Length: 259
Image (cartoon, rainbow, N blue to C red; front, top):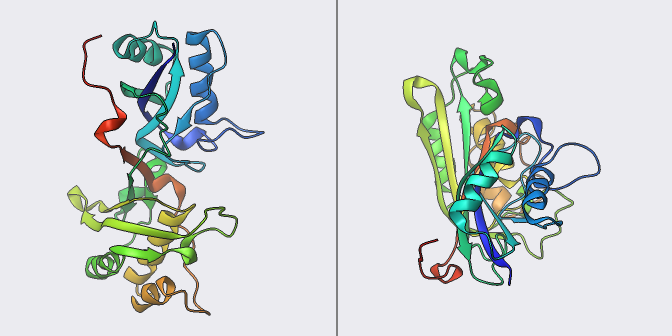
């Protein structure tokens, strides 16, 4: 009988056109499924906790799949890391209960966004992994804007028009800006029960414009109230965004056993 697994995957999104398979371009899903097919001897379908866009990175993307029962988590972890491309790394592999689904079973997700406000943000060693803004922003205005996001809101204004979600309401549990070491800029942490397509990048773009005094902080309230005549700022660049982790209930995993 097949066993269900959850792999926690990291990847550098620079050379990917996103997570999900597409007609053209290299995707994380395609690379991961190719590796699993080699291990299983047949095609394997995987499901991720989220769908990242081109250039977006992951520190802990949950990926679920099934493999023949001869595989155990520790052996599978070694095999995966021997075969995945250099811009991917599997942090851990856990066995999950039958019917587990990395996206549908998740009760929460967390993202991180990095902004570089110093001159060195434009270094080739940092530019691919953050928004190289290269100019100061008002920390107090960032914090005030983030505080307005906490709670349950309709984020329709921050979703792309082609989003096919049944509704656009999200419950935000975490939304905060923190100063990065050595005055490099700021980190935005946001956690919610669900996210809409481009939602985090649109939020960051809007909050940064507020912090640059290009629009009033009250615009966030108007956007969340779905007032007509007000639109978000341009989405923040994809390379500053990281999928951090997904949360799952304990019942998604069998009691701990040795391999």
